[in-house]
Image (cartoon, rainbow, N blue to C red; front, side):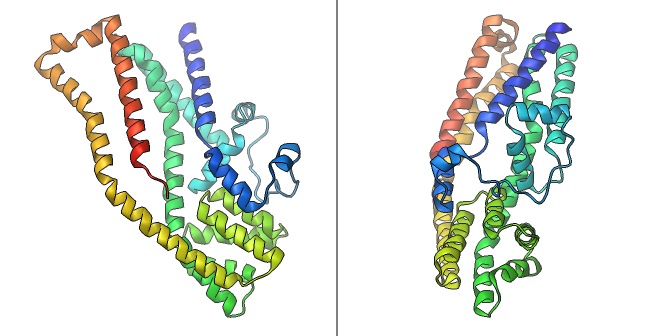
Length: 324
């Protein structure tokens, strides 16, 4: 029993480490955002602007919560909370981690004590999967929500441009988006307007929008607005050109997706063939395939084969997923 608990704790720490290194965007993307927003690497390394960390919406999680302390220990609290905000779910970071830990603990004990030999040996693998499921769900919801935002974004830029030509101020145009568009775009711009209206500087409110919606198009929009505020210029005309540029990127992305569809289908087929072959072998010749289930060497060979198959699938996905 003690060994099972220790093994489970090791699994959780490994899972948190993997999540720490896998999320948060690429370094190249962060450098692009820093250049667009005018942040210097030296200033970012030495000190943090107090206005930059200003937030009107604070988390209601108690600081004494074990989950909060665990997240802060691994420096994941801000990242997890940002992911939840991007998904639009009314969850907390501590609640998400507690749910993931509970699911992993239940699944681990079920597999460890109820699964027949040798499947009980894979309880730690199933526990890692159960721990990752809530995070995968939140990440999937965030991706779907950001995709819907991206589809509405060019029209919102043209709406702001027309509104400014009609004589409205930029902040008023942001508030009007809430009435003219649907979620999630309406809610995000409404929150930006409320933050600015309640006293937060426009620059910080827009940067908060960029954190909640990590799209390069949004960073272009923020950079254009802040640059126009500092140097002047025709913001309405600039927003029209930006909307046209975004639509052209959509068209190019659609062409690339159509061309790479064959590659994605091939990657899935090649990844499923070994599993289909193994299932047929279990039916037609179970004694031959039983080596991978009953023998210790077979377990090692099956694990290595599964790992290489997963690695191959990831590499093929990287090849066919072309960013525009």
